[in-house]
Amino acid sequence: MMNDFPADFEERKMSSVKWKDVPTRRIDVNGVPFVYRELGPTSGVPVVFLHHLMAVLDDWDPRVIDGIAAQRRVIAFDNRGVGGSGGSVPRTIEEMGRDAIAFIRALGYQQVDLLGFSLGGGVAQMVALQAPDLVRRMVLAGTGPKGGGGIEEINKVAALAYLKSALTWSDARNFLFFPRTLAGKHAARAYFAALKERTKDRDRPISLQARRAQLEAIKTAGLGEPDDFSRITQPVLVANGDHDLMVASSLSADMARRLPNARLTIYPDSGHGGVFQHHQAFVSEVLDFLAN
Image (cartoon, rainbow, N blue to C red; front, side, top):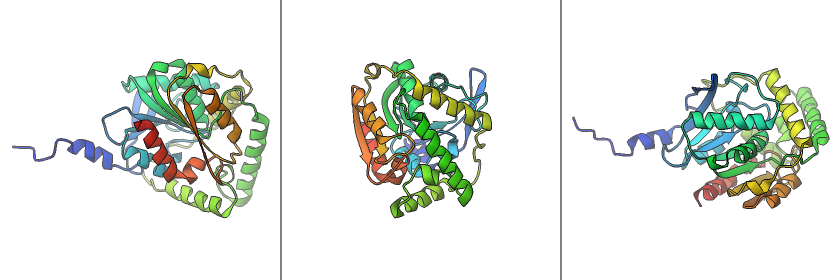
């Protein structure tokens, strides 16, 4: 019997799946189970997403995931000890980078693009430094360089945000990711509504051990010696909001200046979650950056 489906039927079918529906998969990485989701075209260099502090798979903005997956293969995963992945979270971003490298290689990829947000941006830098041949291009959003400092202020900002969230029975990201302006509050509501689109096969919440280890890793990195960015020669897109309370926008700008082949985008009237508040512009710029 003849197959009446067009030659690219399977690819088009995979490309039509949305983040809210894509199944969660598991893979053994050196004896540790890692959970991940993937969607988008099956051809080309995939884009591996590395998420933020205390986040799991369901904390990715589907507007960003689906937007990029419309043209590129997207893979998002929980690193060791996070969400549904096994093991314990390492206490340094260098170790987190090694785990990310092991995961990517376990999937069989020889080269990927990286998109790291916040803590994930720090992990992406470690991947590029430790396995440069593995990385083709890199997007660093809402993140800064190792040794950037400001750890004491970040802790104060985070503590205040969590106090406000407890008093208002709301998510602390309302205060950490978005400015408390009309536009910022509107963006926060849209962001949290998008996160609720997935209703089945949701990820496990992050554990207390994972939270503590991630915070320790961030503190160690912030107080550590700066990395030699001359070793990262791949094209890099650095993006942030113009008033980031978590990672000062000036740190993103400093990182872009120090990277040999970087360009910087600062989104107006936005904060740490500027790439979510301005998700349409961000997706468009990322796709253009990765295509060139």
